Image (cartoon, rainbow, N blue to C red; front, side):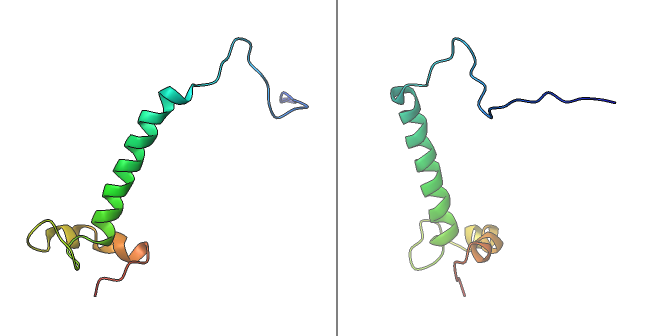
Amino acid sequence: MATAAYFDDTFVPVAGTTTIPVEEILPWAVFGLLIATIFLYFVSTEQGAFSLFDGMYVHEFVHDGRHLLGFPCH
């Protein structure tokens, strides 16, 4: 019969670990927010009332994702 390890506590500390300083996380958080904002723009607004590109290529590329996220387009 195989036995599994059993721990009383769900958190098992590891010796010598430290937390990540905010100064190191902040640039990545800002970058992630920028990418998320650009993604949201293309899915929600591009080829609608305001568009940066001519034609319907961007609209057709994100069309199903637009409806999946609840944005109307037609």
